[in-house]
Amino acid sequence: MKAKYRFVAVLLLSVAACAALFVKAYGTEKQAGQGSGLFVAASFYPVYIAAENVVGSCEGISVKCLSEPQSGCLHDFVLTPEDMQTLSSADLFLVNGGGMETFLEEVAAQYPSLTVAETADGLVAEENAHAWMGIAKYRAQVGAVSDAICQAAKGDVQQLKANAARYDAKLQGLQEQQEGLRDAIAGSKVVSFHEAYEYLAEDYGLEIVYTLDLDEERQVSAGEVADVLKAVKDGGVRVILAEGAYGAKMAETVQKEADVAVCFLDTLVRGDYGADSYIDGMQQNINLLKEAFGVN
Ligand SMILES: [Zn+2]
Image 1 (tube, rainbow, N blue to C red):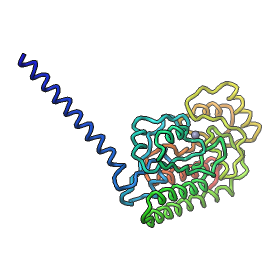
Image 2: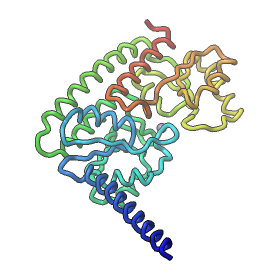
Image 3: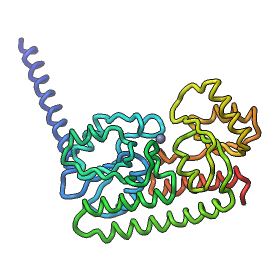
Image 4: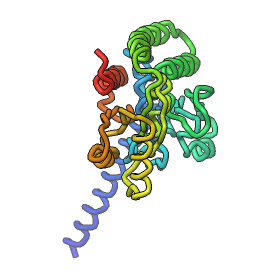
């Protein structure tokens, strides 16, 4: 009997200890967002990188990205319990908008007092929300991110504005390179394997004669293969814009049948979360386009 009571006592103590630990962990988590500082949540990678550059080393402001989607973009993304936890303590939620985040209604219903800033608002056409793929559009998006954070920060926003201006100057350098390359390749016809490249093609004045949207792992039909080959041959296409993860197999198939260069471009929806990762990724895209079109 004695041993049994001891067992129960140990069990009860363990339960109490676990509960105390849980409360402690949960409490700390809440405090991270609800302290005196500003807690900014970003819906996904390009928006997060913009916020990271605007906030920089400003004290009292923290930025967190929602969990990374399994496939390329956010299109079929479902919020995880951890994401809900993040949003419950956020003061500001930066999103792309334009239909990219299909879970916004759910967020508005759950957190009616959370300020949501749609940073690509007015920059994108219906049916294509990939604003960040155009450098000028992304600069405007960074401006919207900066405005939203400054508004939420209240108080002194001088450092935030200086950070945003510094980042924009870097992006301007990138855009100047892009415009230089545009002079050399504008008017060229391309085939695209990803809808995200539409605004990129627009930046360079490239004409997309056919889009095969490979935003996820899927079977490509024989009819689609034939359509791509027909578009390449009839359209005098020299370059295909593809994404590494989902476009490689299709690119290989086409290259067996047609003399065409494949440019594996970064869609900038994932990476190392470093402040310069957009600039580095876009720079790499510029270099790859130069190579594919034979421009020095
Ligand atoms: Zn997408």
